[in-house]
Image 1: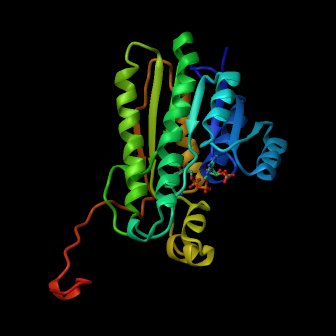
Image 2: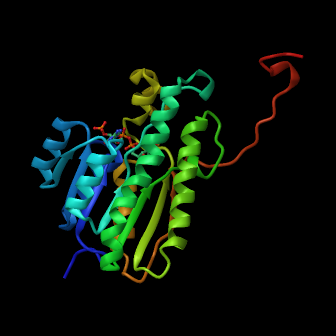
Length: 254
Ligand SMILES: NC(=O)c1ccc[n+]([C@@H]2O[C@H](COP(=O)([O-])OP(=O)(O)OC[C@H]3O[C@@H](n4cnc5c(N)ncnc54)[C@H](OP(=O)(O)O)[C@@H]3O)[C@@H](O)[C@H]2O)c1
C-alpha cells in the first residue's frame, strides 16, 4: 500500500529553498521517498540530514545529467518547481538573462517531463506537478514579461499534456501561487534588502508551507481524481485593475 495513489517515488526540483524545500519536508512527513534536486550542495545535504530525503546536486539545465538521473530514479511523481526571475524589464536584460530564464523556467521543465514520462506510461501511473505562477495567467503591474511568458508556457504545457496523455492514468496539476515568502525576490532583484522591503516587509503573504500543502493535497487525491489547476494567493492580494496613463505622464512626450 503506497502513501500516494500514483506511487511513492517522488522527485522535486528546486528543493534547496523556499517552496521546493517545504514540499520536500511535507512529503517526507507523509512517508514518501523524496529525491531532492538543486545546485546548492550544502543546503541539500542539510535538508537530507534533517528529513531523510535523497540529495541530488544538479543543475536542471544540464539535460544529460537530468536525463540520466530520471532514468535511474524513474519517479512516480515529478514536482517541477525549480525557477527564478531576473530584475527589471526585458529592455534592460542581456541576451544571456533571457536565454537562461527561458531555459530554467520552461525548456528544462519540458526536457525533464520528456524523460520522466517513459516510466509513467509503462506503469500507466504517475503524477506531474508544475509550480507555475499567477504571472502565467494574468498581466500584472511591475511584472517581468519574460517571467510571465515562461509561466504562461508552463500553464499551456500542463493543459496540453492532459490532452496528450488522455487514456493514461497520469495526472497533471498546475499550481499557480501568488506572492510567497521566499528568497526569489532577493535573488532576482540583486539587492536583497530592497527586495525584502519592496515585496515582503509589512505584507501578509503566502508561506512556502501554504503552497506545499496544496501540492500534497493534489498528490493525495484518490487516483481517479485529477486536480488540474489551482490558483492560490494571499487573501490580501487580488488580481485585476486597469492602467491608463495621461499624455503628460508618458516617458516620451509627443
Ligand atoms: N515566491 C513567489 O512569490 C512565487 C510565486 C509564484 C511562483 N513561484 C515559483 O515557485 C518556484 C520556487 O521558487 P521560490 O519562490 O521557492 O524561490 P527560491 O527560494 O529562490 O527557490 C528556487 C529553487 O530553484 C532552484 N534552482 C534555481 N535554479 C536552478 C537550477 N539551474 N538547477 C536546479 N535548481 C535550481 C534553487 O536552488 P539552487 O539555487 O540551489 O539551485 C531553489 O531551490 C519557482 O518556479 C517560482 O517561479 C514563486
